[in-house]
Amino acid sequence: MNKEKFYITTPIYYVNGEPHIGSAYTTIAADVLARFHRMKGEEVFFLTGTDEHGTKIAQAAQEQNITPQEFVDIISSKYQMAWDVLDISNDDFIRTTSSKHKDLVKFFVTKLKEVGAIYEGEYEGLYCVGCEKFLTEKELVNGECPDHKKRPELIKEKNYFFNLKKYLPEVEKRIDSGEIKILPEKIKKEVLGLFKQGLNDFSVTREKVKWGIEVPFDSSQVVYVWADALLNYITALGYGSKDDLLFRKFWPANIHLMAKEIIKFHAIFWPAMLLAVGEELPKTIFAHGFFTVDGQKMSKSLGNAIDPMELVKQFGSDATRFLLLSQFPFGSDGDVKVGNFAIQYNSDLANGIGNLTSRVLSMAEKYFPANDGSHAKGGQGASGGLVPERDSELAEPVKIIWQEFEKAMESFEVDKVIEAIKKLNGLCDSYVEDNKPWQLAKDDQEKLAKVIYNLLEALRHLGVMLYPVMPQASQKILESLGKGDFTSIKLSDLQNWGRLQSGTKVVKVDALFPRMQ
Image 1: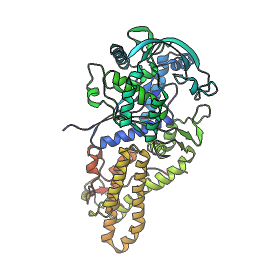
Image 2 (image 1 turned 90 degrees about the vertical axis):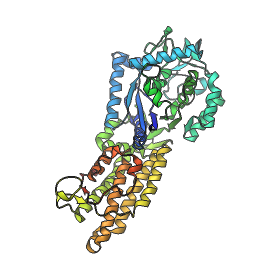
Image 3 (image 1 turned 60 degrees about the vertical axis):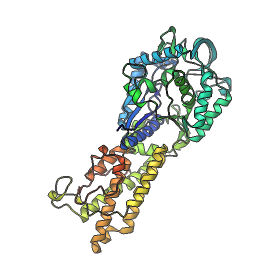
Image 4 (image 1 turned 120 degrees about the horizontal axis):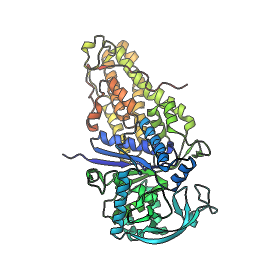
């Protein structure tokens, strides 16, 4: 039986700057979804990477007195290091300066020419180097680019243009019908509004740019950085090469995930380019919102473009993932309250998940001690506790929380995934307070056994639920319960109540989230 496949991508990040919490936010969200779909037993391909061509890169390299390739090598390695530290489980990391990508971009552009989708023309327009794109007069504010506060350059050059108008009706039809899902719904409405404003054919090549992929049929041209970047989603899979097994297996993408400032390129230009060469279109394009940091727009000049590596040093990778994704509804604009991270860390993680884990395992050891390690089914040694006889008092409420968790995952609402985790944590805390195991230990051993079993089994469910968001804490919790091999078991089986067998040895763990002072 063939496995379901799931192909998820982040945008490839432009290497004019180092990783910050904006790029980390998108990548962590994609990682949560990729891990969830792997848990479901699907075959997942998760792609991220760096976008490394264009005028801006050449200028930045010149300022540092190094070659463009040396410059992009340095910055791209910082992205790869950051994603490693954040436990990003990507299957590939594509770089647009790789020979494979460059060769396949040339193949695609040649195909566009062969099918008559591009034509030669002359372009005169206002070009913002910071955006690496042409702007119209109506997009300017007081004659300046609204993002970079600079007057764009007037450029006149020969380009090859993509015949966008030819494909617009079909792209609009597929978006309107939902064949290409654009999410959230408000972004779909914005995209459909762009068709009514009138969209012009766009340049796929540039004449006066040196740092880029040379057009195979015209050495005076390089592929425009945006066209070059969009193609990463298929070149990484080997599209157009002899080794295209991954492309045949995983394309079309199940979801392209990005911030909304690049939605036009992904929702309109990219599908049109694919239509031109007769390839399938991505299934879902999800654009999350913009965010401020402690109420201010994130920028280098304000000094609040926060390095995710610094957050990891302070809070650890699991907590950084949790804190970034739990700030506001995924897909909406919002404010990342970095100033409150320590308070939230203590309340949700140290006093929440960490305290519950420590409390439950300590009670198991205290009330049902494994005095002789030989009696236990899991672990070695004399310390620890034994799982009492099975009971299912919490089975139904935990099942309902799992339904909420899965619904949130399937609709890409990662903030609601975290809400489900917190809800399960709260359920266990309330169960402890309602049943008072310390009192039962004095007068009702039978009820105590049931309560401790429910808490240990609910803790197992919490450990499983944590895995996509906080993989390290998840692993530690499940290992403490003798269930550290859980990643080889399908999620539908892990969700069954009662997998924790009576007599299994459980052991305490060091504080998962030491309280911050």
